Image (cartoon, rainbow, N blue to C red; front, side):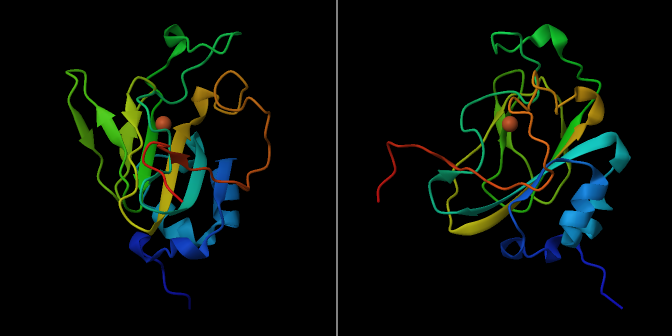
Amino acid sequence: MRKKMKPQDIIWSDQHCGVHQATVDELEELMPDLKGLIATFPENVYDYIWDVKVHMLMPGQYPCIPNWHRDMVPRDETGKEDLSKVTPEYPMYLWLSSGPLTEFQLEDGHSYKIRSQTWTKFTQLDLHRGLPSSDFTWRGLIRATHKNLNISSPQVNNPFGRKSALRRHCQVYLDANNFSW
Ligand SMILES: [Fe+2]
């Protein structure tokens, strides 16, 4: 019988790029090694849409957006975020295997890094930013987004109308001032 995997047992370098706006069934079919971890999710998994991103990082590379921003704020026809349309009663969760850890900003302006290997709940109103990797490392990111946030719509987070649940690309972001080759 196959041993049940603990979250920390996932070998991220063995995974493919991840999934894009997948149902939990698609996620578990495409990334079966994550089943044990998904079983620890604190809410009903069927109420959420799933993104997984797997990165091979070098020092100085950012696996996610490096400036302060909010996730899943609906945009108007010009592409500008419309904060009157947010519904923070529908949450999101972020889970990171390891650093670089995402930094969140409190209302008083102070900021803190989230814990790795922990489901961190947040909403469309929470400002956050990615930090650069300090190591050569593999990193897994999981973001669960409540389905009522309509992330698959062009106004929220699918401007290209992408439909494939298998993630085929993973981008990194660079601070060109610190980059050398
Ligand atoms: Fe973000």
